[in-house]
Image (cartoon, rainbow, N blue to C red; front, side, top):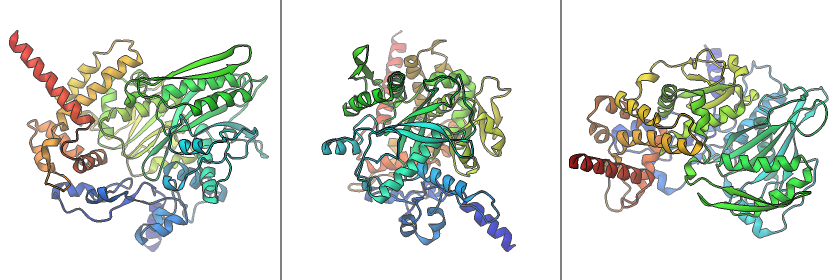
Length: 560
């Protein structure tokens, strides 16, 4: 019995998440709503009553400091992302690499401690460093396009295998203190893993189709940095391994950074030294507002000075998304099944051969939740060395290469095959995905999606798709402002029971009762409670616009 208990304890330790948050004080308001704030999920346990007093208490996965900050009952969770049991035979080196990679993308030291740019790892190419303290401050405040650009190359080890290493970095910085160097080392280790998630399984190639994909590095406070990666075969003769260009930025704008990669790749074909002046000009340029354009001057031998125009989409919420891949891989009905599982915060794994397909589909699915935000683990591409993350008991959206499918435990989750030669789309499912959404509203979403042209452009999809799902949320939970009880000088209190009881449709009421238990709705309503009654957010404006449009339709109908 003692041995079984110890085994269970070790298993629990193996799945600790740095995004766990501890309540400072239990909330005693709204009994029905307080139940959903119990320890129902490792990823985010928050106290609504204390939200206005500052940040939640993050459990950082870094050893040492996390032990000092966490309360005793959470020490095991705080001190490591992955911890092995006694009977494991994995080498110490592999364990360290696992722990380093996990902490790099799941938790980092507080942003407030990082005041400087990060110093580069040892690189094969020396680059000029910035010479202005003012620019350093501007950089650390995330006003630049990017934090840094790195080139990740596959280098041969003594054993004859290939290992991804950073061989180029811009900008190069000096003067970091010890903890900043350690933090940077962990981040760079994560970057190499995400740029080459296949690990060491490579062989020299004579042909390789370039592909662009993205990944996410999650901060301990829940904020995210985006990694944009382009993998291609470097210029040369004969068989050679591919290399990857990676840009790390706090900005989510996939299309814009894909365009930047085009320019970087063009200059790389001439010389590595040609990349620096272009990236320096880009780094000094202000990131444009939505719908605006920034122009970058760059000199290329034999071509002269070029002016590159970089334009952001008008709707900044959609600039990281390309819905074409989602609807190319899945039918409208299949998209709704994925949406149903995601909106109830279930575990969803996407399977594909191409990395670009995985990253584009996962980001598109996350946007369907707008105005709500996915609050749990989101890894568009899971490196092979971290494949055990699929065993996590908490909600997640994961992208896994198809060759790793046999390593996925397909119990109690939705597994979606995106590959072209698939025999079935849903390899594994809970079984109720088709019945989660209210039937009438489900039909309305399908009708709205059919309004798009057969070969819709990115702009056409960006107009039709988000609106279809936004109207769904308006009709199910758009009446929430009427059920936030407010008293002078105090935060509002959401009346959950009255909220869902107002709905006339039994099917809609059944869905809403489940949806308000999710973390995404919980955090959304917490923000509403803290806002003044006069403050109107994005969702409130869209609700008002929708009802105004419906009123006009009725008036026109009466006239005719």
